[in-house]
Image (tube, rainbow, N blue to C red; front, top):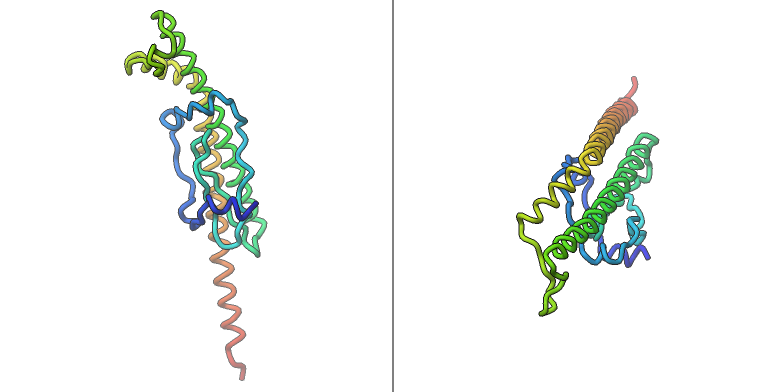
Length: 200
């Protein structure tokens, strides 16, 4: 299964996956219509490669959250601090996916209901005589977009607070890991230098 999953994934360096800022009010306000009709679970796909000791894996965008899943590498000599960092990063990835998957499914359902209600108010069905799906004007849809953002304002604010809190903790742990790694390198060089110094 890992081999089949890896075919759709690609390896990336750790530097490309550092924490970055996401604005909840301006991201991922749409998802695919099939996801709305089928109402699939929001759980991330289990079809993913095994962690690598040398690089991270990044997969194709999830159809619900629109986020690319990441599998972080596991160093062969992973320290307790590095393990703590990796687990928090992976947990944050799963938390982020869950939030946007649920948000996007909710958005699509409410959008569909709004379109149907507006067409019904005009005495129209969802599809015209030619079988094509009817749409609303950009001005009409702007009413829904504003309403959706207003109703979810607190939810987005809570998401942003938690996102910043997690990113701060992750950044702090990354700094600690870097300092520990630097100290380990310096002490190892000093030890080697001491051992290689000839004694009289």
